[in-house]
Length: 308
Length: 252
Image (cartoon, rainbow over the protein chains, first blue to last red):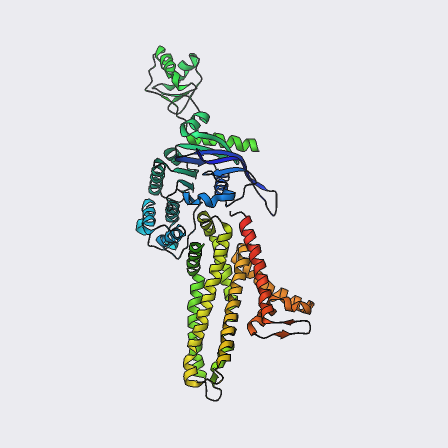
């Protein structure tokens, strides 16, 4: 069952001056139950607008949205108790402590202090929970937002750039929290533009560009779908290796310290044989790993160019 | 709805502006009490019955501050983005709007009632030692209670008005600007251009309502009840506009 189902979602912001701005252009997305789902896209691609549409903060111009089988525009209140969310850097009452802010929110649902303490602990804010929010750094506010999103013990978490403003240690902690939540069977929908984080945290990803989904699936599927493929060869004499491989009919190019051969990695033995026949023995022969950044850039740039 | 209202009351009470006002009110009233005591003389003794106009007049002046408090309560939430946090917890916007506006009016009313009590207490030493109790009877008590309640209602009205305009403009400054332009420019222009319309203006109706006396002019006559109803209509219209926009507009 899909926890989040989006079909043909479009959003145009009307402007007092100038033409309307299209933030979403027929976005299709399906987020299955359980695990961590990464929602990737460059700045201005429509990630936050999508999340705002999911939480009924923004009305879509057209399209269908289902969140836990509810239409957010009509009956979000029916499922909101199962949805924890954090949009950008959340804002809290600055003159209250972090703990008091959470108690305030918890009061809306009759959530007890034990749950507040647990959420603060899980977000790594227990030690500073008694301090006023106005004394918090950006990273601490972000942690408080994460703690608030955990308060309801939700089935679904919708987090917009949760690692924003966190230091490396904080990013690692958030990564562990998200992975833990996903492993518990919850669905964590997390938008980000930090590709390394997405790769380490998410089970599935969707890449959005220019308001459309340009790739979706497991991280491996997305990498396989758009990234460069080939075999990397490292040996003593690179020039000799290049001429040997070209002589054997391979398309290859010399890099700084490797030869990049355009070949399906499953056929890497052919490269080894061609080199051995010329008396060249590679120190290293490995498939060229698709890089999420390269895939992301290739997919998003293609769409920006198409749109232009 | 009860939980939401309690949360909004706590939010309102956490406003720094409200706390600053409370502190200034206590200091100001205490200072006024001391000065009144020191300056009172036996030739023109203070009469307790004067409280029936002092309290409403004081509260009437505070309407402007309450307008600011109402506008800043919602304006600050829009500015800081905490309205987004609120709506991700309670997506029923009409409920959120009315819980916030009701909390605002409730807190302001309680605060002005407390200020009224403080004014009375601050003047108590002077009344006891240098004043006169002449004229204190059941009729005066009723007049005092009526005047105080009307002035509390007027400040609550001002807070509601500020809240509505602040909500429509999503900004405290926009609400203050609108309020200032209306009172300082538009009412003045209308009053001189169309004197017959004066009895429909907010300022004139507020004056009648606060004074507790029917007003007769060349063009019309206005009772306290009529003035109160007219103000209530204006407030309802603004609240309605506020809630419709709050429900319909995107939260970006």
